Structure formats: structure tokens, C-alpha cells
Amino acid sequence: MIYIGNHLSTTKGYEAMGKKESALGGTTFAFFTRNPRGGSKKEASSEDLQALKNYLDDHGFGPLVAHAPYTMNLCSDRPSVREFAARVFREDLAGMERLPGHYFNFHPGSHVGQGVEKGIDLIADVLNESLKPDQKTTVLLETMAGKGTEVGKTFGELREILDRVRPELRPVLGVCFDTCHVWDGGYDIVSDLDGVLQKFDDEIGLDRLYAVHLNDSKNPLGARKDRHEKLGLGCIGAEALRRVVTHPALQGKPFILETPNEDEGYRDEIARVKRAMLPKDGGGEETCQNLKK
Ligand code: FE
Ligand code: FE
Ligand code: ZN
Image 1 (tube, helix red, strand yellow):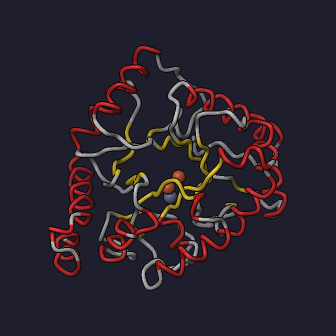
Image 2 (cartoon, protein in one colour):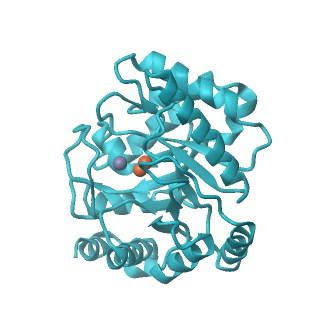
Image 3 (cartoon, protein in one colour):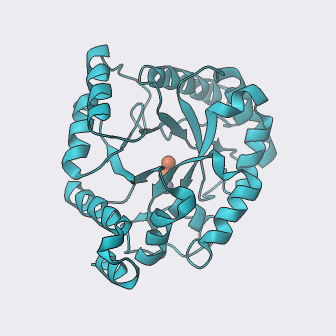
């Protein structure tokens, strides 16, 4: 069983996203909790959310992985930007609570020159103020590529954020593993996926890994560029990505495609990821050749 899907637009409503994902062959999806570059938030209607809940149950969907807007920087050096970000975080988390049992993923933030330690403190402050032990949403810190002053480019930085969150809040906090970002951040998932996941386990704990962003990268290992590529057309490549989706430690997690595609491209990638999971498809070299097509 694999939960695979892509990022969808909320413009036609929530139930519509479920139906759209099914039409693409997927069993999970991602969406922005508000305009990714803007500020305003449109609340979903209760009827629409209920209809989506029913749809997900009826069609065997895995957890959804909502994404916070890119503008939300919890560790900006400007207090007004931080306050806005903290408000967005709380409002969007409250919105997620209306669809219980799913994931809310966010970029930890960019410290814009204040230093990683200061950034980590500011991020943890917001988490300590905003998370609730009894919330129904799991909040995920995303592994980052390390572009600019991004916090979260190493497993150690994410671990430090988790460590600074009060123990009773840690159960509602986890990590989303972005293959393009960890690769760009210098973790060699091509020649040593086992080693990278072991490192993740040592520094964070694999029990904290809730979701995967499945992307190829336009750039070589450690480039810190964060430019996603279609599966099998980038520097990570089909074979290594196949090992990711079939890795025992990652089974049952939702895999979200954030590749540069339109609907047809996503439909194709979803089908290929599902084939890679089927033992009858041959696996190994043959499947990888198909993945490269
Ligand atoms: Fe992201
Ligand atoms: Fe991502
Ligand atoms: Zn990215």
C-alpha cells in the first residue's frame, strides 16, 4: 500500500480536490492552507469539509499533507513579519483542526542573518505558544535545501527545534522529508539512502518522519538551490527515487509530488510510483527503465 498524490489547488473547494486526486490516480494530496505568496485566508464551508471527509474515507485515502504559505517566516528579524507569521500559523492550524487527523507542513523559516540558533529559538517560541497537546493535526517541520539562510537544512537543526518544544507538545510535531531538499542539503540519498535514513533515525528518530515530498532535483548533491525536477529527469534519478518509495522505513507514509508538472505529468508520475511498488511489475532494472521513460 502506498499513499501517493500531488499538490492541488483549493479554488474549486475541498471535496473537489479529493475527486480530482482520484481522477489522477492518487490516494493523498497536498494543498496550501492559504495563498502561498499572499495573506488572506478563505474558510472552507463545513458542508464541503464533511463531504471531503466522507470522500477520503470511502476511497481509502491516507493522511493529507497541507502546506503553509511560503511567506510565513516564523524567524524573521522583523517583529511585524514574525507576528504576522505566528498569526498565520495559528489560524491555519485552527483551519486544519476542522479536518481532523491530517498533517500541516511548514518551512521552519529563514533567520535572515540573525544566526541559526536565534532562528531555532524564534521558531520554537511560536510552536510552544501555538501547539496544543490534544490537537488532532500533526504539524510537520520540512527538511530544507539550505537556500539563503533557511533553518532546517540539517537533521540536527530540526532536532534542536524539537528539543526546544515542551515535551507534552512533541507528540503533535513531526518532520516531512523532502527528497530534493535533503539532496540539495548534502545528504546522499543516491549512493547511501540507508545511511541517510540511519542518520535521520539517530538525530531525530524515524518515528518522527510522517510524510515524504517526492521530488527529483535539478542540481547536484549539496547544491543548496532547491529547484525541483520531474521524477527521473534530475540529478537524483529514477532508480534512487524508486529505492525511496520502496524503502521499508517509509512504507505507509504519504508521498507528495511537488514536481514541475501539469495534470498529465502527475497522472503519469503517480502511475509510475505505484508500479514501482508492485512486485509483479518486476522491479529492479526493468522498472527503473520504465521510470526513465
Ligand atoms: Fe515545502
Ligand atoms: Fe517540499
Ligand atoms: Zn522545494
